[in-house]
Image 1 (cartoon, rainbow, N blue to C red):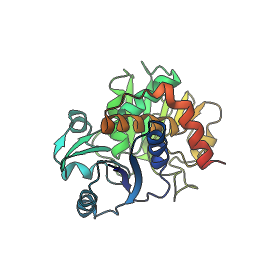
Image 2: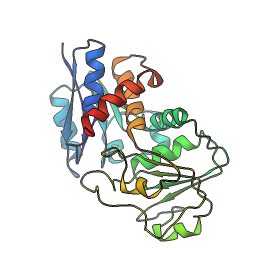
Image 3: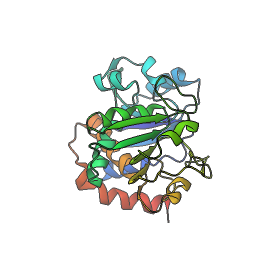
Length: 265
């Protein structure tokens, strides 16, 4: 019996998740298919019901639904409760369980990069679902400090105009904003006049280009786009849905080459 999986969000046309998952299904000879399913802001509840009506077996969640999805489904994994966001939903006999594979994807990517975050200062750009997941992941990596910058700062978050106050301290930047991804390819989350003199690594979790405008600005540091994290979280989702035990480090290069051919050639 053919099982159907999906990724939901808006915009969704640029998503590479169908390429990752359908390639894995072919490799393992599984009768599964994976589709992109657009659900606009404000229509999440009805969109979920539509997915259930076609007997979906599981789905991923991307912008802008990773936080709101927590309101509408049944069983919530402990990591989702701590993070406040979910990106992977397992459907079993009509019931749903929420999981977060984003934070595991980030941990796997940092491990692949062999970057040691101990006693480093990290700046996360953006305060949405991906930002929350990465901040949670960093609690396991013992950085010295973690700052979150937001257009609408809340609590201890910084506004973008405040970043000059920490520019001498920051060693790692992670961009989780949609700026740099379609339809915002030409935009940059940082002001042109700010310089992080002690920056060592920049991870932009977007992946529509090999280098976003933000990445191009920091040529003198290690720059990484979001393909690695995307692949890692996708494998984690796949394992949840299919009860497989695929390993990121064993599949990274093969899937990365497939995706780069899809989006860059």
